[in-house]
Amino acid sequence: MDAIVNKRIKQVLNGNQDAYTEIVDLYQARLYQVCYRMLGNKHEAEDITQEAFLRAFINLHSFDQKRKFSTWIFRIATNLCIDRIRKKKPDYHLDAQVPGTDGLDMYSQVAASGALPVEQLEKMEMQERVQYEISRLPDKYRSVIVLKYMEELPLQEISEILDLPLGTVKTRIHRGREALRKQMSQLPMTEVGGKR
Image (cartoon, rainbow, N blue to C red; front, side, top):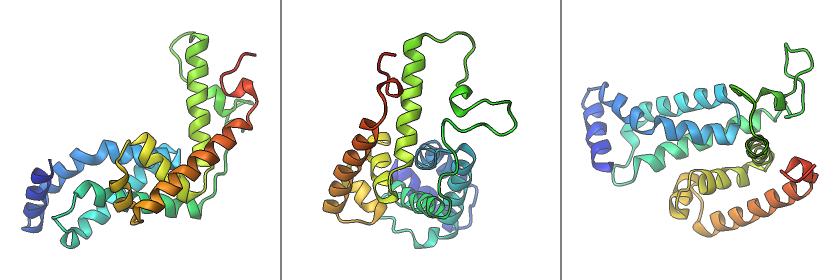
């Protein structure tokens, strides 16, 4: 895939801007997922994904084609997410009332076409809870946890995306896991899928 991407990059640099559409198509879904997992907000994730592709396009002339484009675009998006997180601290909680509703909270927003089995509902609640707890991690831990466990990227690529030494990435993953484990252990058993 890298050869195809590099070919498209050369075409863009030679004036064929339509070739960039193919690059966007290749990476858009994965990049959006990274942004969504880091930000926890669909609209912000869409904005950051679009901004990352725009910045990459503007700076395409500076891309080193000996490197992987995916690493470069993920770095751009991750940095944009971290900037957004720093500018805007979380202003919602899963138990907070949804604006414009009559007392509904975020937990009530689980979509269903019928009655869900209890196990499925508990699994969905647990996934939401884990996502929420990840969003509460400090920025430096959140980014490595998302890239390692949700995007399943290799440590070396995470190191390149975040522009950090490999040892620092390993340390942050370890400390991020510990912080997440500590946060999750402080939840009552009914919130982490235990019996009521």
